[in-house]
Image (cartoon, rainbow, N blue to C red):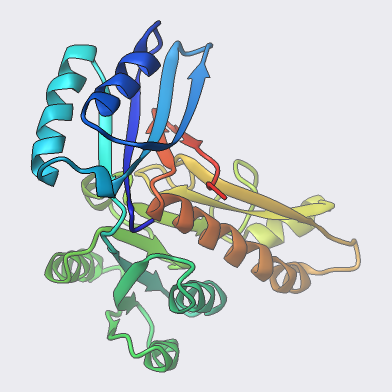
Length: 287
């Protein structure tokens, strides 16, 4: 990723967008490493992801973005640029469950997730030892019904203080306020321990048990004001047996939860996700 410039582009579908966009970059002397595109015929919408070789940058980064902004305005494009050598700063919010946290920290330490994690925030003290293992500052911010507003304000202060780009809710069992999710729209990833839209809200494994399902799953999505209804990034399922009670389903579900969350975070960090209305276009990884 560190030798690339990535542009995520969307617009109303019409002829010539691909040609004019690639010509714009070619005329500046860029080698286009990869170009992925998707046309939603039902919505009449076009989506594109372009990877450029950072070594071909002809001037400054701000100059390239200004030039493309003028091009985008002329062609009525919505766009975002990501510089591959920039390490995103990620804050992880947790409660008492550790499996998703461990998986994220492991993949960062292995270099699989290109980011820095300058802090972990929790409403419980239980996972401080995990943060200590990875030498990451741990902020315990307890919350009650009466102190929810003050606790959330402190979280926001920490996110600003540490210059955070992305918030990951790794089984953080608290509901964020609408003002929080609006401010951080498209920058909060949550893991829900069910295959949405089934079994929303609390205790989905009990709901799954009561329905006698033969599969359980997990869903990573961008958090919005509507609980468990934000744009879905990644999902997966695993088959289960009638012999499992809610506790057994929960234990079995841990593996799929951590895999789904890490894949979603990876897609976001690699700028492979475009949000359109309440859906996502997730381009596959380049291998």
